Image (tube, rainbow, N blue to C red; front, side, top):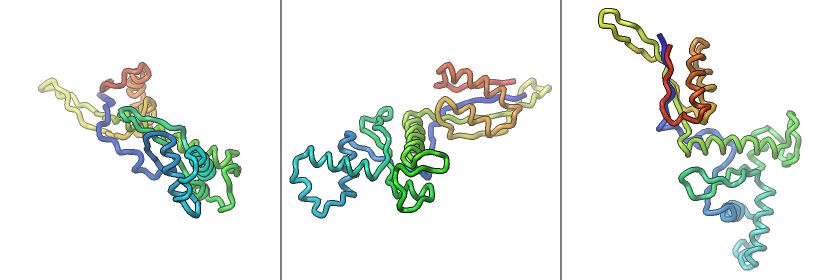
Length: 208
C-alpha cells in the first residue's frame, strides 16, 4: 500500500543563494538600474564632471557602457514587489564560466554553436525563472509513504519512504520522479494531472 502527496514548500531556499552566473539588481526602474550599475563601473576619469552634461547624454553614455560590459535579462517584477529586477553578467564572469581567454567577446562562438552572449542570456533567463517561482511561492515538496495494514485494529500505519522539497514550477512532478523508483511514477502522474489543470495550489494526494 502506497500513497504520494505533493505539498507547498513554505520555506524554500532562495535560489539567489545558489552558485549563480548572474547578479540580481533591483531598482525603481530599468533606467535607474542601468545608471547605478554602469556608473559604479564607469571608466570616466572625472565622474563628477559626467553629471555636468545633459541628463539624456549621460544616460546614453551609461547605457552604451552597460550594453558593452553586460548581458542582461529584460526587466521583470516578481509578484508582490513593485521594484524592477534585472539579472546581469559582466563579460569577465562569462569568460570564466566557459573557460575562455581574455580576448573573447560577446560574439565569440562556443563549441555548441552558441555565441557567448546567447549562452549567457540563456542561463540568466533560467535563473530569472527560478527566482520568480521562488518569489511567487511556486515551490513544492513531496512525501512518499508505505502503509502496513493492522488486522487486529483494522488501521493502516504509514511510514515515510521518501520526502524531498525544493521543486519549482508546474514541472515539479516530473523532477520529483528523479528521486523515486519507477513503481511510484504512476502515483506521481496522477498528481501531475491536477498540476496540469492549474489546480496545484492545494495539497494533492494519490494512493494505491
